[in-house]
Amino acid sequence: MSPQPKPSIVFAHGIWADGSCFNKVIPPLQAEGYEVMAAWYGLDTHAADVAAVITTLGRVSAPTILVGHSYGGSVITAAGTDDRVVGLVYIAALAPDEDETSQSQLDQFPVTAAFSHIEVADGRIWMLPSGIDCFAGDLSAHERKFLWATHAPAAADLFKQKVEGVAWRSKPSSYLVAKNDRTLDPDLQRFAARRMRATIYEVASSHVPMLSRPHAVLDVIRTAATAEP
Image: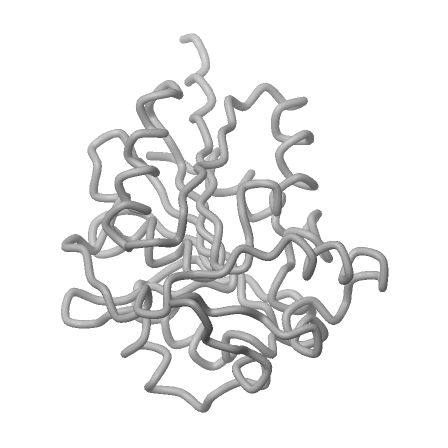
């Protein structure tokens, strides 16, 4: 019997980020023979972001594992209902249920330090320079400066928008909790992971483990990608 082909892997980023935030995990996966793409979207509307991920599914071979970081978890929760998706990986991510938005899920837990270092201007949510330590405090000073300089602001009402579909209710899910996260409450992450009955992992990292602890992220993705269907 011939071995099952490797699934494709599609990444979905959060706010204050773009597809390049996965630049430490994509090359190793490609070297191992995985077909990988990072979806790019504007953080303008939740519906458009979900649509961009679904469009990206059409550019890789099925079956596909969706990997979402932060707000990207909300994106893959909706986009993952697509029949081409066979599994979900959440990295320090939101995962709203049918009656929730990203914001209403956030509101169930204490406000984290990062949201004391933002400014809403021109209809977008900007991170202040002082917020980068809350967002990515375990990166080098050079990396933190670069990350702030390239951060992508989201539409001010993005987290209040909702798209139908909750893929984690029907698709196998894995969740990596960032234990030192000062942007998305680790207890929110644990609650979301338990609720979806995910395979749960934890790592001592800031909100960006794919940059600060890429090997831990790779281990979770590899395990999900090689799981029995």
